[in-house]
Length: 269
View 1 (spheres, one colour):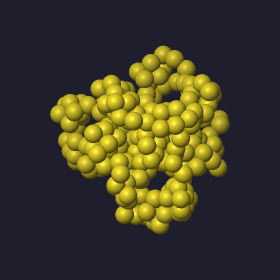
View 2: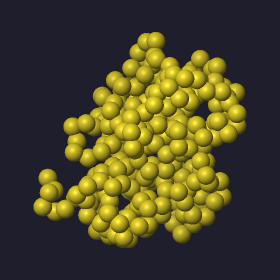
View 3: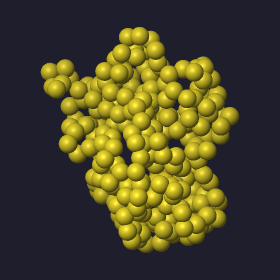
């Protein structure tokens, strides 16, 4: 089970073993989070952009090291025996990325299906501020290979025809009809990749039903190696979540995504 409902979270909110993480990304216009509006009670803020992304990388949202992840998770008060539920303010968006990060560390977390949107739709209460951890947790996990893959691994998979790459960007970006939002990147797509916009996996704020998700991926047997890509490795994880929910067991996210693949050759490091 990768998803939990708003009803489930509401009914378990007082469980002392429950940790709720708000993984909302910065407002794309204001470039910050408004920390004072509509927070699920007891939620701790998970700072994906500043604490859980590799700031030494030239690429956005790159996965941090095992030791860094453990340290930051401990500072949020997370213990190894906690039940961790992740949400964001868009529905299922950046919460899927954080879920995949925990999964890559061998830790089973859960996504609140529909996020804050569904929570408020159900009429459940919100508070004004995030909870601050009273003490550091004992979280300690080990990074697992295969969950995040590099450009070289994607190139190898394409050459060997050993995986199917899905690009979850908007069709206009995939088909080179408009510029990338990140300046300096080429237009286009990864060779052999299939475009499936991340919104195809959702029904409003929530994930589509298991039956509908199965139908979306019906052309690919369950033993197919699936690699999901997007602009910067965030919405690709919505595809990874969907594939996992319906039973695919060889699923990867191209961490650099188009932010790396789309760099003009003369600027590649």
